[in-house]
Structure formats: C-alpha cells, structure tokens
Image (tube, rainbow, N blue to C red):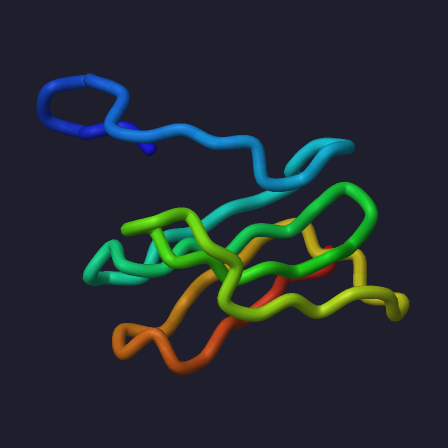
Length: 79
C-alpha cells in the first residue's frame, strides 16, 4: 500500500502464495480485498494484516475488485 502524496510505501505483505490478481482498499483503509491468481477472494484487516473472510473455489476468476463506501459490499469484475 503506497501513500499517493509522498510516494512512500506504507505497508506490504504477501497475501497469496501464487500471486495476487487484484486488490482494493476500503474508503477508511481499514480493509483490503484481494483476488488471488487461483480465484480465492480474501478480505483483510489492514491494522494487523489478519484474514477477516475468505471465499475459496468456484468458477469466479475475478480481474478487478471494488468495495462500497461503507465497506459492506464487494464487487468483482470478471471480464
């Protein structure tokens, strides 16, 4: 996660062993949603880098992600 104004790296961690296809931060920057290369969708707590929720399997291979302003909905783009 980079600070846009300063260009400094604020935090970094490896969330998916085979790579990450997409990531998005909640508006308050308290949650990070990621999509792994294998299609796993994960929601992370940015304060302590803990996994909050994970959706594994299925045929959804997301290419992009967006969280709603309140952080309660996650949209996944597949094409």
